[in-house]
Each structure stands twice: as structure tokens, then as C-alpha cells.
Length: 155
Ligand SMILES: [Cu+2]
Image (cartoon, rainbow, N blue to C red; front, top):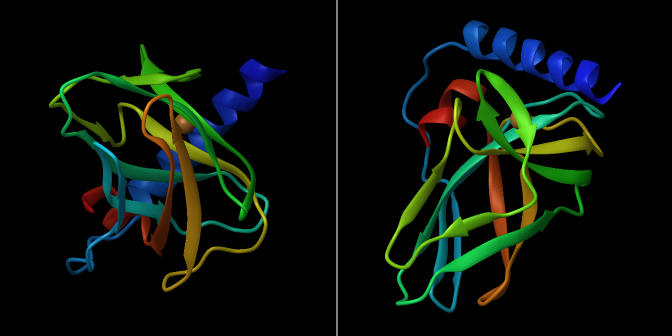
């Protein structure tokens, strides 16, 4: 069942990605920082209520020690999954290390977030809250704009 659900998500995402039109440059994505960790360029794709909504962003560790993203949640969705792409398929990931001095980009074809079961239809102009918990830095809440998929990807 889990495998079929994941495959379904992958097809849905592909359709949205291909049909998304190229728009003008969006405003800057959401950002916030705590300790040595900064989240930036955060954006969520438009999505119908109850559907999965992919989110993209960058995580930067300006410190001298590695940190690890251990959990993501949102008051606007049932859950938020961290996904990796392995051999073209989305795989859930329990955590993601951010090495000292490194920036990790969450983007299509690579690591990304998937908001599962969004509580309302997410339309352009809406904002959702993503709360990241890092092992060392603690919790970082990011007000994240909803953009068309093609613009969320670019943000
Ligand atoms: Cu995914």
C-alpha cells in the first residue's frame, strides 16, 4: 500500500510539474533562522485540500559543527514528510544532515518536503507555516508562501 501511494504521488507530481506554466519571477520565499541554521527560499506548491503539496527551500548551516534536521511539521497539514529521490522514486527519509558551512537545497529530483493532507486548498497568495526541528539548533518556524509549482521550484 505504501509503495502504491508513493507511486501515485510521483505521478501526480510529474503531471503538475509538466503542466505548470512559466511565470514571472516570484517574490522571495519564506525565511527564518535560529542559531547557526537558516532556512531560505521556502515555497510550497498550490494544492487542493487533502492532497500532497511539495515544498522546496534551502537550509544553510553557518556554524562549525554539523546539525541534523530531525522533524518537520505544520499546523496546516496532517504531516510533513522529508523525501529523497532514489532511482527516480520518492523515498521517505527519517532525517537529513546539514554539514558545517554547507547549504542543502531541497528541490525537485532531490531532497524535498511533502505536506501530506493539507487542511485547506492552498492557492497563490496563501501562506503556510512549516516548523523545522534541528538536533542542535532547535525549532525554526517559517512562514512559507504558496506559489504556482513552476515558481515554487524556482524560488
Ligand atoms: Cu516526495
